[in-house]
Length: 239
Image 1 (tube, rainbow, N blue to C red):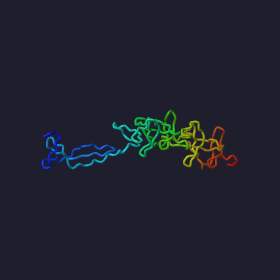
Image 2: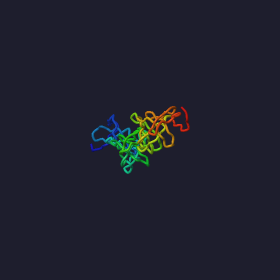
Image 3: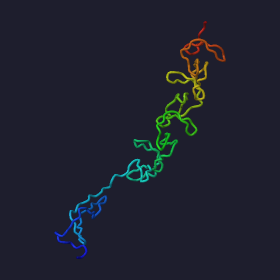
């Protein structure tokens, strides 16, 4: 018999397995059928449509490539021109030329704000940390320039202004309902005596904290003074 000869119907022996005749693509249907197993016969039966595969789900957001590296994708395209931070809900990632910088630890400036990045994403650190030669004050990983006052640090208190410790500060500063004597930006816990604050008030200070209920005598370089409720009473005369 000739090659690809079609046999009479009764002489066919069809395979139990389907063969793909035309592969489906993203936009076009394909087909499959069961072929006759008789040598040289091209007959087939149970011809079945294979639906088009469709476009498939495109990568969007922070996704891994085939090597496991993280990139920022938009419709399957890596955003190679982007440098900055991107919050995808799971983390606020630091991206350079579309790639997440997982090995980066340090400061990042983005939209005029300064952030502390650790392991490629903004670290939600709160408190004081030394970065770029300065002691910076962080709230949720961002330098907080709105707060002014004392901040705990390693058992001490530091005076913060404009997002960093102000080592020029010398004054009485209120913190948690008490007045603290601050010198060179730090609570001076070793100081006891009289101190004149920037508002002109003299305070009686014990171990760096104003004793606001103290009434009695206190001494400084200029002599003895009568204190009433922690402040000098210049009008008092008596014993």
